[in-house]
Image 1 (cartoon, rainbow, N blue to C red):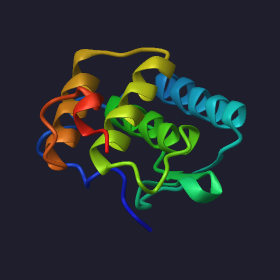
Image 2 (cartoon, rainbow, N blue to C red):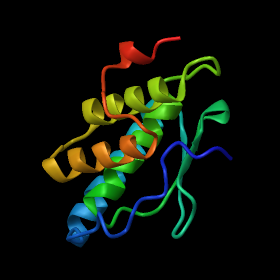
Image 3 (spheres, rainbow, N blue to C red):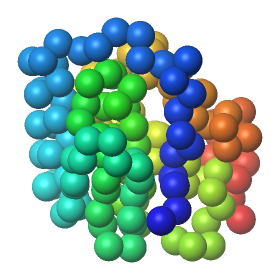
Image 4 (cartoon, helix red, strand yellow):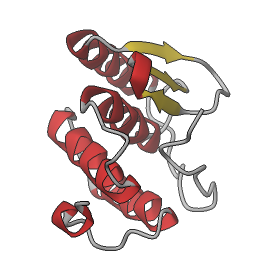
Length: 134
């Protein structure tokens, strides 16, 4: 499996665990988005998070932190956007994060900082997708 999101730096994230109620709300929201997009969402503790776009499947961990929710949205974005093999990795990453922002039920500074961190792991510091068109 190809990773679409680099393994997060645990020193950077996970400041405050969400309340159980918020965890349930965000899990339900991700499941509803997956259903709407026809994506097989599998929430598996301690799995390697990623999107199998070719078969419209996403593996993710249960939401405990706001960053988990952002990553889940991002991975759903990869499957929902029907990325083509010839598209650059930068293009795919930027568009999946844009999809995540557009489809979230909340977005905050912590999530935005996590996006910047994840993109920087791919060497992306400019979120203008036009820069990465092949």
